[in-house]
Image 1 (cartoon, rainbow, N blue to C red):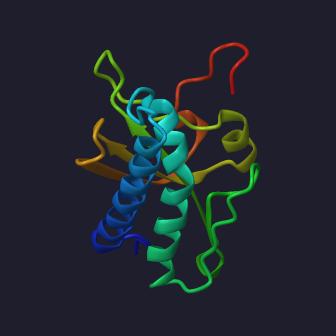
Image 2: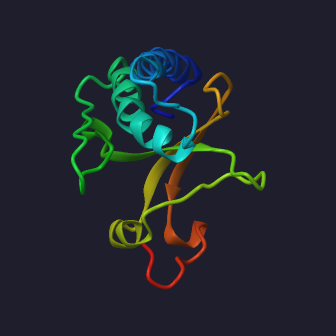
Length: 147
């Protein structure tokens, strides 16, 4: 049984889209091009992703929490002993997608579930990918000096 289903993902994405619209409005108000740096935009959308997916999972598992602090799991579901790492990504200029993980943390934990939200530049189209129990063997080793 998966703790995340399609309807939960749709609910979370709708809330993320609303939040994204709010950020666009604030940026426009101050004359800042919100789409000039999609990496920064995705950073701003990271915490809302964790929050809104946590809310969706809570409908099935009420004890679910999302702490948000650095070094803490993105989402914890204590009743089933699971942690979920959340990542948001946009296609790179070369056309590839980045499915990254904190290698050192994953190595320490042994395995973790991952939720990748892939979005287009305008935040209108999405792909949601859930991976169960990924390990460091599922990723390329990090480049020297990186995590």
